[in-house]
Length: 136
Image 1 (cartoon, rainbow, N blue to C red):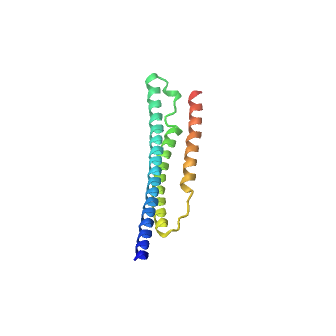
Image 2 (image 1 turned 60 degrees about the vertical axis):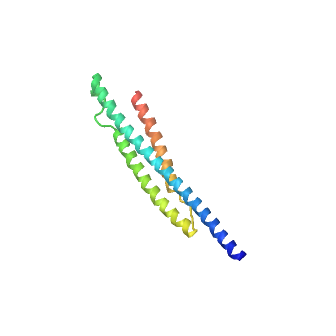
Image 3 (image 1 turned 45 degrees about the horizontal axis):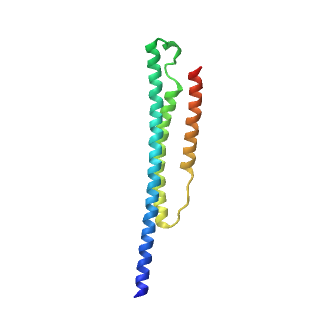
């Protein structure tokens, strides 16, 4: 009878450990979702700020010096699309890891990490170029 109780305890401990791993996977997924929403929001702000600058220039009378459509709008739309893509990839990764946890075959993937690093780098480069262009 002691052997059956030990087997039941091992199954319970394994189930608790498995739940914790699944919850950690879910927290990671939600962190990626927050990041992708942040990138989309930043893209929206960049695009709207370019529109604000254009309208403000018209209001104060310096419209000829401001280009009608610049690269800020394109970059803003790109960031929104990139954030949406990151959200989709995060979901795909979440489901893949969930399956790997169940099969006990987890293998880390670096694609979202690289995508996030490239996104942050591209935002930094864009902002530096944009601020230099605006200040001249």
